[in-house]
Image (cartoon, rainbow, N blue to C red; front, top):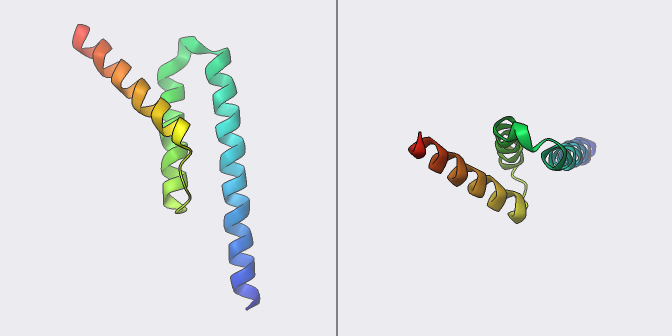
Length: 79
């Protein structure tokens, strides 16, 4: 029984760390708009980590990822 509680606590801590990293990422996105491609890749990576933990994805971040992806695809078509 102890092992289950410990594993659950570890998953919760990992999720909290991911949420904190996403918060920092959002702040960086506001402060460094010139580096949007790198931030997009980091956002995608963090969302994939949440998926790997089976955690729910914040809908606003999912929408932002899709929006940035569409924006970059449009830029590539224009080149």
